Length: 305
Ligand SMILES: [Zn+2]
Image (tube, rainbow, N blue to C red; front, top):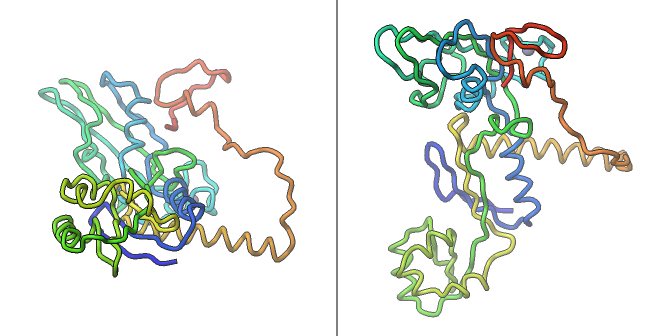
């Protein structure tokens, strides 16, 4: 297996993954999408919400505000020793909001969230959450915790994570191909001996000169089944390269478990049912501070998203 970084900026990493089959490439992709944890808001206590937007809608919006995550500082709540419902400083962070429109109508932004003691802060401060008119206010305390995308997509660290095959086309007209490569750059295609390695087929074909030089069917005929261009776009919670390295760690751990099980000949567990995550149904309808006629007839000020 070979990897090579094609480009890296603040939120997007493109790299080549060569010499693995689609099952492995997809395992890596799925681990990035649904298992690499990030911090996001989960529980909210409202002290005041006199805006027109219901508590649960604001809660839902807050869950999708990416928070810059320090993976070395927090542990997953289920792996924390505290076992407290709302967690401890090792497994949750507190953010507060205290906004009131004292004169005109104002927009409440993600930047109005105040994080406690260097905790996770919103990656972007200008995500609109609500508009409040004169006299209205939004005040709450929110608890963020680590989680995984397989539980809820708000915990997925990527806004995009895809791979595509690359193509290795034999060169017939070296002069034209050389010009092509110069125009489109090494992120799109490079010359490797007698072949043109088309790294990004979509961007290659969006250039008229390249499209005219190398026929579309030729590109498809020479797709490399075991070589991929990965594109990982972070939502900002983690650096894209950290997402990949964390995914590799998780995958390695799983494979170690598998190896141990094979060595111990412990691989004959019958698969009975597919696991479904347990959902606390009472939490689904108990967001906010209002009175709710739920089945237990309880009043509650806590809520999940
Ligand atoms: Zn804890």
